[in-house]
Image 1: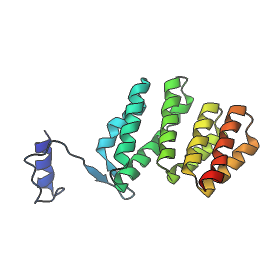
Image 2 (image 1 turned 120 degrees about the horizontal axis):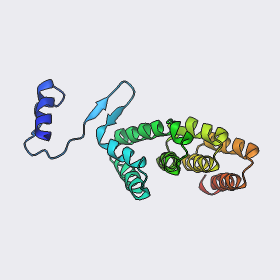
Image 3 (image 1 turned 60 degrees about the horizontal axis):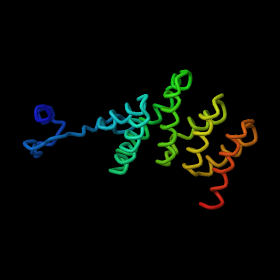
Image 4 (image 1 turned 90 degrees about the vertical axis):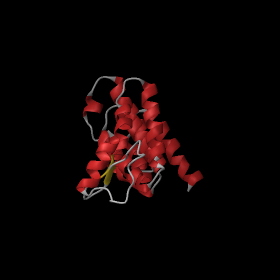
Length: 181
């Protein structure tokens, strides 16, 4: 199947003519748009984040982190896909815990990837979401991103937050500026 796909891509001019496709066993297809390049191979691992089984979510998360280390292009594609997960409001409206976990895992990954592009979505969740564990995940991600902007967001949240668990996490994240900066 992959050889057929490669042949079609060669015929359409998508692949350079000098590529030898006789021993190809897998194929990563970058799909370019005017804003970023998307790699199809990340889709199954993004899908894993939506799985009810936490073990599948962990495997998908680990694979996304691993893939993001392969190149900056792939990393940006992973970040873009994870931001789309954060923007899926139905995850935060659903009563199933696994849906919240999907959102929180995406936030964790974005923090791990230091994805400053996710700051607006994480800020909104921290300052506006009614669920404490979503605010906690947001605070942790913003702390991991560790920019002056995220520090200011955490300070703002600390001044208005009422939940002790969230306040404690924000304080922990803010304390990292003294040790990491």
